[in-house]
Amino acid sequence: MSPKVTQDMRAQLQNARTKEKTISDLLEDIQKHIDSLNSSRNPFMRSPQAKVAALQALKNKLQENEGENINKLIESWLTDENGKNQKTINQHRLVFKSEQNQNPDDAPRTARLIEDWKKQYGTLTVPSSEVEDSLRNRQPK
Image (cartoon, rainbow, N blue to C red; front, side):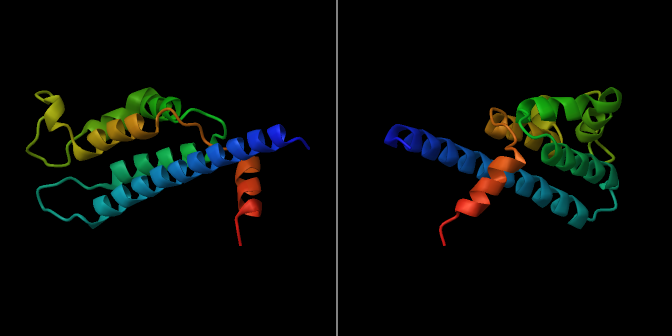
């Protein structure tokens, strides 16, 4: 094998490693938010179950769609079932908050996180299982 091919392969592998780590970070961020929703207790707040279920569906979608763009997957997830996830994410859990008078700066924390995730991870693609397998086999020992 020529040195040029080896360098190209090394660059591709490093790029895939970076993407894998970033996708893992995104999945970890989603899980942390799910955990925080589950641990919050307040008599003036709606149950987090709907948001938790929606976020779990997002995690599943990200894990099942190899080679897909993260931003497209998030947008697709938001519009699934006639925008059900979008409505769920944009609903304030605090019962006193009105959705009609919602200012973008006053959006629910989950909705703001989704927008942040789209900015941070949106340009990446979900790595294929072949890439993940090759990364696991090539990890330094």
